[in-house]
Length: 232
Image (cartoon, rainbow, N blue to C red; front, top):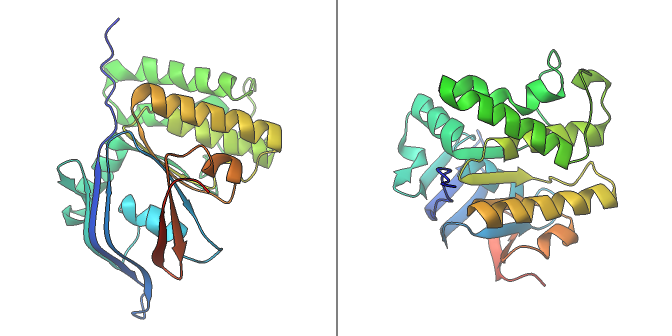
């Protein structure tokens, strides 16, 4: 059976710098290259700039200069509208604070990306959302997300990002709200999904179980890259 899903995109970063509104340098990354389908972990102490890097790679943070190229597209050179369109099509994101719609149930949230896709793609995306929820151990019926625990809300957010099958998946502490068993199941799912589809995965995490499954690990301290190599 043919598969038209997009594979991962290569990443090329040059002269990337993020400054606060008062001009303080929050992140400085002179260069970074990664091939399509790379699995990259980002670790470092709290407040070091890990999430800032992730948001810069998605074009979601202001005060950013330099170049972030996904494939042939320099994300930072695009207008806000074109940047948003690029994210909608090419980047799946797992946020620490979930960003769920309280008025929707779990499946509605997991399949929300369907609203921004051509009509012909919507049924398959919603079906994938239901499958991802089930794979992550959620059988919630029509329960609203307001009644879900933190771990359940995290899994809904993860199912949403995975259902979109975007070529790039950016994850900010994806296992933080999960118990160890659920976190390990999620790690297995993330690694299997990205390997099977060639998705480029970049994950910020303090979870060594996740970091150890990555091909490459970046250590960020005081807004700079201090180590670049395999898992310890």
